[in-house]
Length: 263
Image (cartoon, rainbow, N blue to C red; front, side):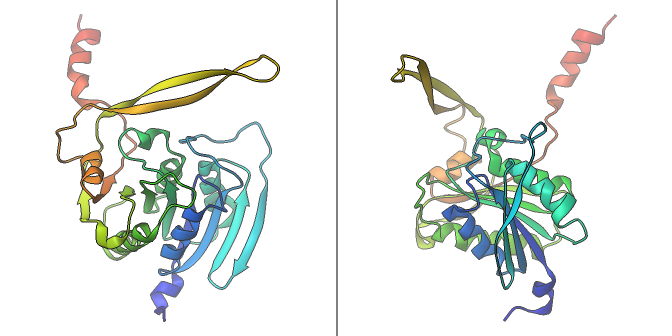
């Protein structure tokens, strides 16, 4: 039985794979252990949308289902649109205790944090002063195994809710695929430095018009580093990276001042 404080909590769940994905059901499974759950998630797949917002098209919200402790809404916008809709309209008179974004089908480690709609939504939640957790599992399959994600997601969410952590707080959590007993534990680590090297594959449709499919591979700039999210995942650990939105390159500022401000 949930205690009174748990009953009073309100958890917002969203994602970028759409309200019907298996991963969001796993996120709801985690969230409902800590309080009432409201899901506001995209109507369809919105991967790779980062912090995108919808400005020049109408947006449509519909309630998909309602049961004890869980309401589910589908929204026609991006993941960030979903968070804005929740905080600024649907839940504007209610206190949200936590945002969970995910569970994403596929890792959001390293530079993926900048492209990810999952993390875009989590970061947006932190803008409202609400602790936010992005959960991803290293399996892109629509039928991915989320047992480990649920186990470690609950452990991390409990720590966020029950520990006095400084806000704003946004965590990028990536979980290796597999059962909990196969995962070695949790590592708090930093974002790996690297980039994606894309490749475009050209084809022609039946009308002779060319089209392209995007593919690519991740290039790791520091494969020997042992304090990164990529290393943690490669060695069977859950990676937890605290995320901040200040992108200022402070180390470069002195040389820029000398170059640009000297008389």
